[in-house]
Length: 290
Image (cartoon, rainbow, N blue to C red; front, top):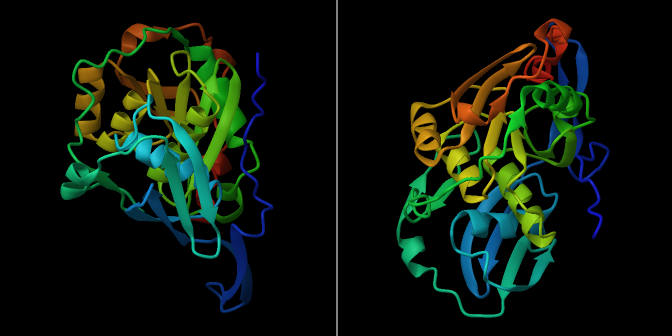
């Protein structure tokens, strides 16, 4: 069986952030690290699809994951190559067969989020008849994963102004992606899973962002049955999660969490008296920098 190397943030990558000089509230000189933001134009074969604002790491995963999560590529489509031109800031996903994306390009829905995303076509397309696996999830793993993710060196801890999303299996964090928009971070996970043939049935997706309709839809279409967030919910996100049977857990902080959908998967095996209270400096994972 092929061994997949764990993929974690690289906060020391000089391309992803830079130091900016300013002053603080007393007028004293201050240097802080700020996240970079650059455009990435995504093509599917010869068709330009969209320009996304991103931090610039893993452009191949982002381009492929975006096309998969928008339904422009199917799991059965054979991707032959992904070309990335750093100078032109262009990623081209090439397939063995011809694709037809015009219908989806005609209809766009702008989505909620600090880095506004775009959904092409019908947002609910692909959800009808979707059945997610009933893989049990143990609540004890939530606390362990939350601790691991909060203590993993990351760009968020260095700069703030960024979202993180992690793909987990049991007590393992398999891939942890960050970006200026939570949508991009999830798309990178989707692209990484596809290229490495990672199965979704026994996975959990953990995010620092809000549980919006688009986050729920993307998670469901990826086939992942459980989505966890430190943040809260939107009503439509909850409605869709209940429609597709996704286990939706929000406000995961310290000992506490709230599950608003898919409670049937939960195995309550954690002694809460053994869970330490969350350190104030870890609330919203470095939020003191924002």
